[in-house]
Length: 402
Image (cartoon, rainbow, N blue to C red; front, side, top):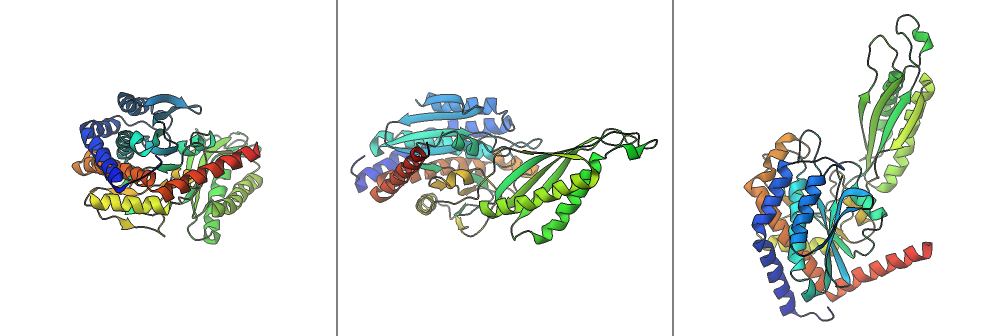
């Protein structure tokens, strides 16, 4: 699209909104179907197929299984030089299903992709729907980013289900380790001195980390869970397993604090004589840095739909692999609200509200608002040019490194 007029922009806004309305039953059905069959990280085969099926039915070119992730999806429509990505999440949590609202997130992104596809030729864009698995675990977006799936993307958009409408919030950077201590077994009564107690190593590690918490920077948190520490009380445990997760306000703080956590884990091995095995669990998540123009455009779009988002700039949410994307290209990750009875994310009560009338409205409003953000970007010559220049700079930098 080389020229932009107010009338063509208004037409694109109207057409994209009408396209979402025309698919409202299918989008709500998609959200409900994802909710009814929750699948956890890297096992989202049915969910990925559902996302892909809707996109294929709308004329998108669809691929399931991308970047060695069998449940990742890429669906494209259009030929414009401005590639706008919609990130669709659909993984659930073990035992409690869609307790983070990813059925709403995923259906909303699909709806936005359909809305933008209806105006792709009019506003000169390529719509790229990216199904991103394992956000709750190993970070599908981070892995897809590293694999080059976002290399042609000028801006990436999505929303997240929540108990309120908000814009501008950040998130904590996060990284995790799988921890294994290996010792030596022995009879706990006859010859305990001949054993090396791996469970003792876990106990010392948890104590050391607990003492370290006082010296960690503000906003830095450590979570851990013991996954195994022996099978019989009269046998010195020779293997103990845990997982440690570290969160910080920035990726830089995450890196600094990680060294101190590692020292605690190593000290426990030294004190007990156990051997320590540390394996990164998935990708690190960067802190979320939302694009100002995209945020303002989204806020205006949802206000036009009767919503009043809270400005959360300066506030920090939990963590998201959309943070990694936001470090590389302009990104949008607001929250879309509906009544959750006061329940918080990652709880079973929150999941129960995921197919409520409020959640269904959230799917459609978010889809419409995201589509309107895409139209706003495509039809604003200054912002379109900015995103294309940033994309060109990324490509030039990548080429210089090869």
